[in-house]
Length: 555
Image 1 (cartoon, rainbow, N blue to C red):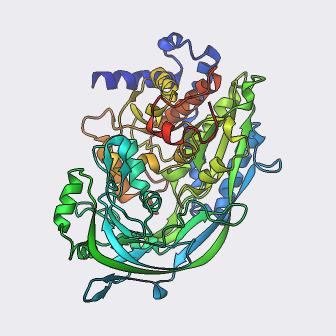
Image 2: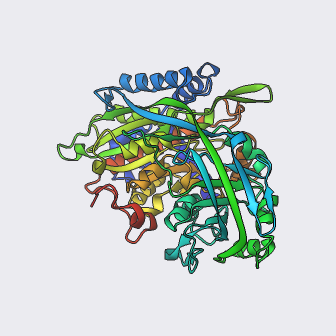
Image 3: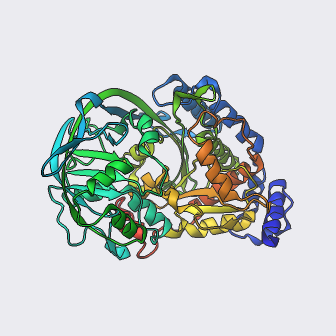
């Protein structure tokens, strides 16, 4: 606790402008240090209050409330002197979105054994996922169990080793081996359908471990019934779909057990092996027929906000550090405790507000950084990172000139910011800038305290990682400075009770001094990155660098 107390005091001095240690940080010029100290907690609070007001009705893409949020962000950036960097000389980038929904009355899932058929009950035993590539999807095939459905030979694990699933439906347990590093675990937990399609499967069935009480069918069904959104390319084709898969379903625990009725390995044994992180695959001696009627429900005219601070170096100004925060939230939905407006104060009015204050710090510099800075407010994050994926795939600047991304999404400032979890920092040279900024602000760096939440895959930075661009997603850690307050417990309780509910409004005990320190951190990491002679690089042999690092043509 001695170190935590020191860092808390040091951070307070940074905010108030009297830190005698600042002279030690030669990488941060004196005029930049002066700008850092002008951060305004009250400005972050005011921006959050506006963006999460009931008048914006939860900022759902395509609604008046989202338009008001986008207009607000644009005018704030305009007032700072940021230049338009969207399409056709504007501050906007159009993001064409489409929603698909399963027509339940025309859809079904049936287990086929040798001597009988067993139809399952929609919403209680299974949920089908909409299939934009096969709007009248109909597939019947034998089922093969493939453990976690993970193929990661580079990590010494492969559920698909020695099994042929071509033309088969694969069943797998949600999640990934707990032995994987946190971010790789997050990636493989979310890449199941892609992996199945790559191995020739024609359908997928997913279910939870019995001990995993998250996303049970009963709780997942209402949101699943809202359908899925995807962005469309210039030919009107939906992206991030897997056309090889003709059916995709989530099963209840009872339905998953039925799959194993004729299996040589019992459900209990298979689950035990998965929990012991053992790869496995075997036929279940049962077939499944999935019939999925998918309807187009609506098209949504999504928009990203894009603004530019031009760099000062005649050469490096043609390279870009991109700040991203998602503007959208869930709109108006099912009432909870008498409230139906999902305001999204923490998720993610906070990230937008902090990035706006970060933009003000950049605009306050006597000289712009060497590289250019882009500020992007993206749409459709709650729909599956759609706005950021669209921008990263179709940027309004040359993709190979984007050198780094810093995303911010509900950074969690319900207690003093004494330590951070810099998701992504360990994968690239950006770790250097994070360490410099954290040290300057007197903040510790900590490992992921909740790897089971697969945080690394759940926000907009990953859209840039997918394009081979080193990215960061910095959240607060678990240190609170109070021995009676466990930061990790507080985080998990918030996720269980407030997250994605109407209670995520401004009536929460936010610590705006901590929010201000997040802005300082965002500013310093981006500034140092923009000043460096060399663009950020993936670490040699890094998993994500190897998988995606050549996508954007960077050397």
